[in-house]
Each structure stands twice: as structure tokens, then as C-alpha cells.
Length: 291
Image (tube, rainbow, N blue to C red; front, side, top):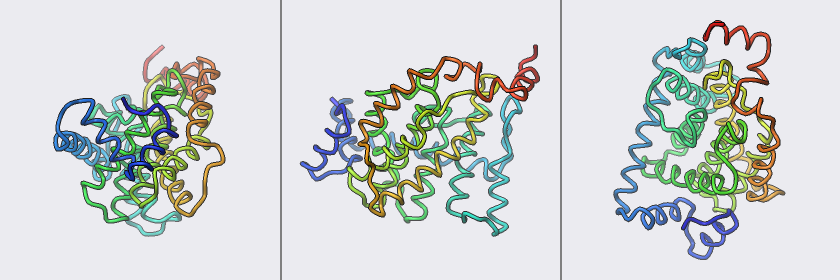
């Protein structure tokens, strides 16, 4: 059975001198009974879908079914091409990819819900863009996805990945923590450093509510994917510089779960509070849904 905590994961990885990715792969092989090659092939297919969704919106104007969001990923791509950005091509490319995946999702396209559809842009944006910068192979990107999966499993075991149960901190927060951990391992960081990154991300997004306009996974979800991708990448650099989290990963996950339970139901995907309940949010709901 997969370990129940980050502390256990770090201990096993230290004792066996393996990465989170390697531990996760071994556990998947053991639990499913399928070969290592088959496990890796399945994740490679996930990576291919992620790449398609992350790139499509950079070349095409993708509009959601409701018309609420769309066309922003290609705007960022064109902005990059002008060459006068503040944050630089690397961060802007991650932002564009996060939006692209979110737009493809809202247009009923094919995405990988990792860990959820509402947060589907964060992992692809962080891992693919970091992989480009670090000149990583597709096999190494697949390993990064296994790192992210291992971290996600621990979050799911001890908290929640559901916006309806824990707010957007549980969706975009978990995705960003998974992405940060994955990028740290891609950069040569230890499992402990990877979980430090996950902890810092969760601390920084603690309490984020889930308040979708008109109840749709479009706004503000898409732009929160942008924020999550940027958080994952900047936190990876933070940790690789030697910065640690004062609060360990397991405690941040526990705090996220407790905070999620304390968030009122109006702020947990019901579209009854937050941005969804503002005058403009209500008008948009009427326009889209009528009444």
C-alpha cells in the first residue's frame, strides 16, 4: 500500500536512495500487477494529452461552451512573440499553457484531470515548461508526472482534492503543490526538498475558496490555473536555493483539510458566494443560464 504520509515517503526514499517518482512507479507496478513498461507507457499517453491541451490554445482561439472564457492563451502567446514582457518568456509560456488547457477543458476538449478538471492546466504548464528550460527528455517528464502523482496520493489520503469539499485550495492548491514537487525532482532536488516545495505552495494558497461563475469550471478557475503554475515554478526555484518550509508538508496538508471543512458551503463550488455572488457574477449567470 502506498505510504500514508510525506514523512514516511521521505524515510523510504532516503533508505532506498530513490526518488518520489521511482517509489511511485514501483508502487503502481506492485498494486496493479502490470509491467513497469506498461505503467510508463500509460503515463506517456497522459503526457501526450497534456501536451496537446497545453499547446492547442497557443495557436487557436479556444472559446468555452458558455462563451464566458476563451482566447486568452493565444493573446499571451502573441504577447510573448512581441518580446517586451516583464516576467520573460519562460514564465509567460507557462501562463499561456495553463490557460490553454483550461480553455480546452471549458470547450469540452480532451484534458487530463490532474488532479481535477478545474485545475487541469497547472501540472502541464509547470512540468512541460520546466522540461523545456531544463532540456529534459519525454521520459524525464513522465518521471515528473509520477512525482506529482505520488504527492497527490498523499494529499488525497489525508485531505481532499475536491473543490466541493475543500475549496479551490484543494484543487489548484494541490495541483500546484504536486507541480512544485515534480519540478524540484526534475532539477535534481531530494524528496525532502520536493515536499518542502509542496508545503510552501499549500501555505501560500491556504483558504482559497471555490466560487465558479454560473457554477461553471471556467471563471475564475482558468486564471487560478495561471497563478498555480507560476507558484509551482517560482517555489521550485525557492526551494532549490536552499529555502525550507518551517511547517512540514504533512502539517500543511492537515491544515488545508481543516480549513476546507471550515469554509462555508457557499464558498465550496456551489456558486452561492464569492465572485459568483457579486453583481457582475450574478449578471453573467443570468446571461449564460437565463433567469
